[in-house]
View (cartoon, rainbow, N blue to C red):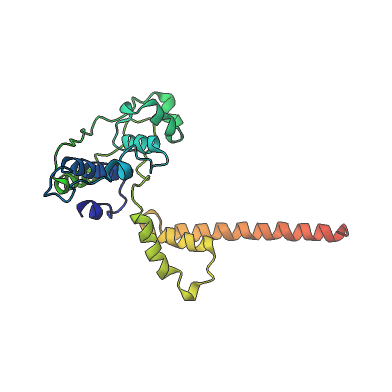
Amino acid sequence: MEVTVALQERLPTLAHCREMLGYLLQESQDMRNNANSSWHENQFFDQYIGPDSDKLTYPDFVKGVSKIQKGKVSTMSAAEQEACRVLVNEAVSRTGANGGSATNEDTTMGESNVSRKIKALGEKRKASKISTTDSVYYNCNFILGSAAEVERLWSESQWLLDRHRSNLDPKLFEAILLLRKNRDLWIPMDVAYAFDAQQRESGEIRERKLAEESKNIECGL
């Protein structure tokens, strides 16, 4: 239950989710032979949510991103580096970054108190200790490990795209939703400027189209 609740947090990074699943895996394995445990004789652990599970399409990418987000770039394998090559910041790479922050401590997997470990991980995340400082990779904290945030967008979308706005243009719908979810990144003047720029661009497109039509008419096409 603690893991389920924690995965519903706002913007949980992939590393954050993988660590929580790791705690859950260790708990299930430790208590598998305990007849009094709800994990008794369970078979699901590695098959479904393990780091090398067949359910993962790109396990090296998942493990690589998790290490980038935790600042442990130096521990990435060659396969993980190759899988995450698209995330390399070429500008930083050319300057010779030292590859990984040492601010994160390794997680001890031997304990069985999942809720306590999840709480500690949450505090670490709030304190911004999961970072990509001194890394040759871009800040990858935008890569999330849970679909909870997307589900929130779907829930909010139903109030935006109601029966009175059923014919709303898809681009306009996305723009409104983007603005509503990122109110700290813009002011009304930014929206007015963008709107004016779009209007000018639309006008230029119309003028070019009319000019082409006039030219075709003159040529008898």
